[in-house]
Length: 81
Image 1 (cartoon, rainbow, N blue to C red):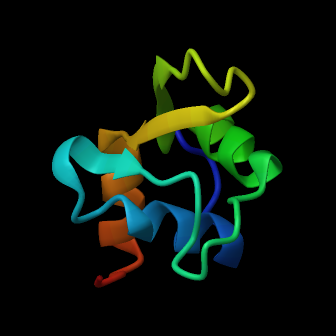
Image 2: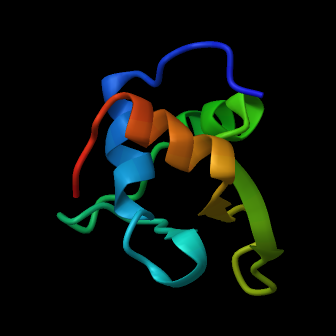
């Protein structure tokens, strides 16, 4: 379970999965820049994201989805789209 409020970078990442099918979190931001793996790993550690599946081509990419705790963190902070 999450212990802290998300940082700005974490919030920006988590918000990207809010409207995606199954809560899929992207590997790249809206500008085409790869999401920092430290941000992804910290969201996993806090319980806001979880690994979804392993990419057989890019094994170092963390394909994740938003968890219920991640959705709650966004709701508590009243984060819209």
